[in-house]
Length: 209
Image 1 (cartoon, rainbow, N blue to C red):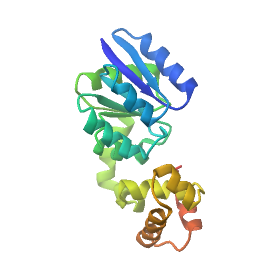
Image 2 (cartoon, rainbow, N blue to C red):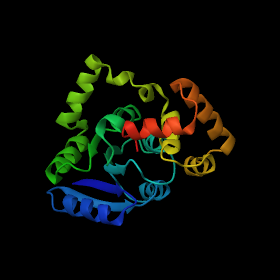
Image 3 (cartoon, rainbow, N blue to C red):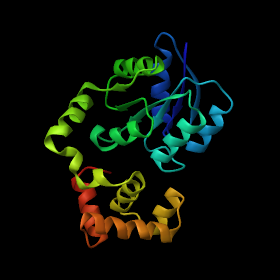
Image 4 (cartoon, rainbow, N blue to C red):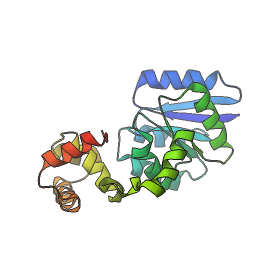
C-alpha cells in the first residue's frame, strides 16, 4: 500500500486529490495539510511514502519547503503539483529534490501513474515536459534571464512582479524588508531593469505568476 499525504491550501483541491487517490488500487491517504508547517507536523506523526506538494503551499518559499522536506524526511518522496506551466517551476523543483512534477490540468490516470512511479523510486515528468527539457538544450530556453536567477531571487521576482509591496514580500518569504530591498536591487541590476514596473511587465509577459 502506497501511503500519501496531500499538501495544498485549497480544500476543494484536497478533496479531489483524495478521491482520485482512494479510488485507485493500492493507494491510501494518511493525512492532509494546508500549510508547510502543518505538513511537517503531520510527517512527524504518521507514516508517509509520497507527499503531493502544491507549489503555492503557504508557510515559506516553495523551494525552501521542498529542500527542508528532503533534509528532514529523506525517505519520503515528493511529487510536486502545480497550476504553473511546467517550464516555469519543474526544473527548479527537480533540482531541489522533487521526484516528479505534474501540472493540475493532467488527468487522474496520469496522477495515479505518477504516484506509483515515484513510490517505486523512479522519477516522473509528463511527456510534454520531457520534450521541453530536451528542447531547451537546443533552442536556448534555459538562457531566459529568469532562469539564471537563484531560487530565492526567482521567488522575489515573482512576488514583486505580482504587484506585492516590499513589506508584503518580506512577510510572505519570512525575510526582513531590508533583505527584500537588497534582492530587488540585485534583480534590477541582473536583468537590466530600472523599476518595479519593468519587473511586473516581465513577469506578466513570461507567464510567471
